[in-house]
Image (tube, rainbow over all chains, first blue to last red; front, side, top):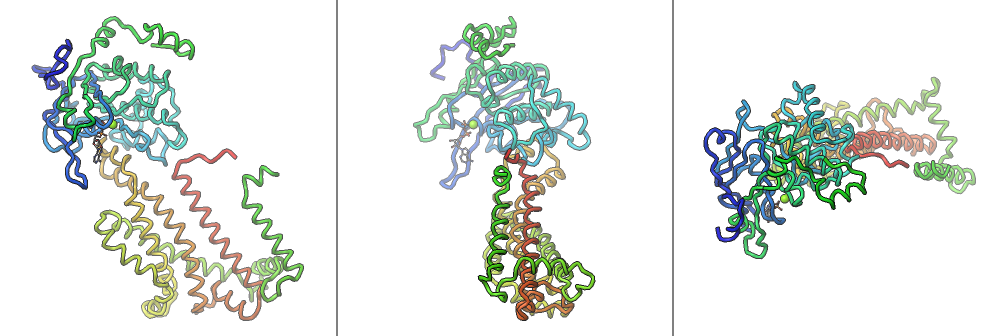
Length: 282
Length: 259
Ligand SMILES: Nc1ncnc2c1ncn2[C@@H]1O[C@H](COP(=O)(O)OP(=O)(O)O)[C@@H](O)[C@H]1O
Ligand SMILES: [Mg+2]
């Protein structure tokens, strides 16, 4: 608790959420994780706590190799060394998770169309086939995409696959959405529409969302909370040190925008570029 | 024309080969006891359809050989896939079994024939089992290695999304199919070789076998029949390969090149 004392919006990563809101919050308490390697165990983070209320998005922001993807897998239910994860539930006994892996290309079955790939990953894939098809349509439209889902993965570009991965996660109507660099391959036009649709969907469906993002523009427009993990690449175990110094910030820009309803079009620079590309901004 | 040849390059090699064959036999460069002319071979193949061509009922031989080969290959596919599944499931089982399989692979399957002949009461099943044993090690290795090198990312995502057990198993089976098809393609040619070699060495009691026909034709300098046998065997291999390749391509989900 030495640096960042000046930051106004700084709140501890273990921000207490009390009262009725507690049941509406995804919460990880004191989780630790280490990889077993040939040389022994490699501790990635220790005693990490975070909380995301329903309808809010938390960004993990930090350099490569600080354990963001590892943390996300743990939040999604992978085995942890210690700690506790509590998620808000809708009726069912287990929270429903929507996961967008960082390596989305490898997450598709090459022998099935994008639509079938998504259907396989939806709850109740056999009996709920028809309802699931409608859910896919809804997610597609909510994200403001225009994607041909009858293609096979081998016939798609990386960006198209990432769009499909976004649809797949959102069509699950998840309680908890874990998105590992979900916009990394999207073009300017699609990214600006998806960001908008994405944050709208998180709010509308009251999803607890955690996203790893490297683009400040993405963070400003999509996230309510930012967990900044500083990079310490030259210490012996950079990941542990980084997580110990992680700080949580609230995104004031986002708060202001949600109050005034401003889009990215307010920046003259972005307005000029999008005009040159013939892109309409939200 | 050029575009056709560029997109079907094998047409060129086929035409060149046939033309060369014709010219060599026409010019008498090679003795008749070594190489029959294309027209003679075609005559044998056509005679096979003829009702009075009974003596050279090539297709009867070809049919019996195909049945033997397919039966043995089919057994190897079934048993090999199942055993490969078990062997590929854990790396300990894999490492325990691999040396044994490599050991078995080096033994020519025809050496097992006399034993199998006794085991099968001198019946036709002895041929089928010889073929199956010849294909089994390769099938086993293909499937088990395929499972070990499978990309788990997409199955892990299914697990994360809470897929049910039956769905998980069904998808896993599809995921193992490429390795199975690869093994099937490798073992088909092996099954043909083992079938014909076994038939050449031990003529089946029915007398109908391409291997036996080819051997007799060779002994009696009936080169047209001999080359007809070779053509038939080659087409078996080609047809099976093309069929399995098509399945592999469907499964890979990749687009064909535009030209
Ligand atoms: N399977 C693994 N085994 C051992 N170490 C790993 C494994 N996966 C990642 N790591 C290590 O854990 C650290 C965090 O990786 P990762 O979570 O992917 O980082 P980030 O997503 O922040 O870039 C890295 O130092 C990486 O080398
Ligand atoms: Mg990562």
